[in-house]
Length: 87
Length: 550
Image 1: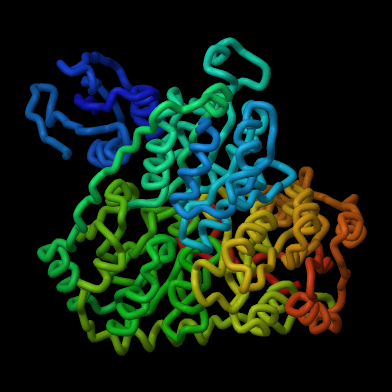
Image 2: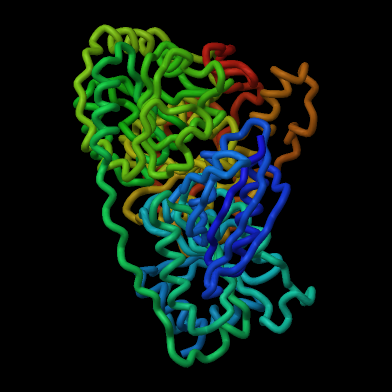
């Protein structure tokens, strides 16, 4: 199953690699990434396409939310784009 | 003020009075500042032991432990200890020296990317780039390490930052988040499930001790009268001699606990995470049970087993809010019958030392008032099965990582956290060699830590598995060439005695409880002794192998 996840991260050293590493270690493959900064450049916005055959995306979102630099996570309901905020 | 002094001043502000570490080049400014800091530094003889000692300190005190190492090999030697704290949710602050910032990324002497290496095993981490940030980072690290689900935080401190002068200190004072009140709707759903249950079991995990929720947990158990099983780390959530306690569950759990869980129609999971060592084959675990899962960490909900009701938050508050009086008299009798029917036996044949009996008698003689630390292997399981444990912070065991070498340094940390409670490290002849250099730490500081070394001249747990599951093809498990452990201890200046017959047990227990200083009791046992019962790998907890006592 492929899902799209949008994240808002504090711009801090290691924030991106920490987040991507967690996603891969938890058994998901990241197949696409795009990133941009917000207007103040204090946060990074990441949009990821993430694939897993059998792992729970809801659990993954909660695991991402444990990261100190993560401010918000949005798990898109489907490829067509219905979104559900996780925090 | 220099950066190193600012670091230590921030730790002092947080109440830190003891740190564990080992000096080296890049961390030298911190060691220089330590001399004037008022903080006690305990010099261990390997950085891994610094992390384990800080871990033991944290588990006993309930406050973050602090360990310090230099860059490069000092930092990499900490990693096992950091991982141990991560997997067992122990609050830890690991401070590493780093080469000066202009040299970072140049493959400088003793430069490693410890920030990158530890990313998977820390709750958070920092590289300090500006001296002025040090107090903020230390306070933030402390808060992260100790709040919510605790864990380790790494602070990597470049040498020029530690040695540089600060011009104006920043400090972020964050408002405390409001206390999260238990959700009344979910509490009432949980209470309804409990009230309707006919065969409920409370599954106690390490989170109860970590949350310091012992009182609320015991009140919940007493109010409901529901039988209790525990994970390795949950031992002591109720005293292990409490009548309603059925024992540890899982791979080396008791028949009563595993049978009760498999028969249950409701599991009330408190601060536990459905670890594979506890559940056995997951899809056959408690097949008829609904689940109420209480945990501080929302990421544990539904990770391995779906929860019918999830209660996320502080365990003490959740348990205090959860009121239910199920009618479980018949079920309780069934569980207590199972417990009586499968009670431990200690009448092993011969006059050799039966390790479970020795451990049981030691804990009973101390009335459970010891801090028992364990290494990893057969002895670790025997401690969990047979020792009287009155609370989780008196039983320190490397649960998640399973790190041999944990026991002795953890006992050192436990001693500093509570010098009034005797610390006994139970070890094996494999494990003791992983951090045996810490005998020098006992000697250096005159620590009255005791070591009970159970010697079966092999890597016993691996040997047991090779015997049972690898057609007795024994590979690299024979430790016939061990040193004379008593002589090794004496060479470090630690008293020692050796026992190998049943008639010497009383003398050994007396020495372990009353010898005035450090002591190693070297106890030889039958090399063929195994840990029973055992759920074979790939099976559900309904399948339990038994074997002969040796």
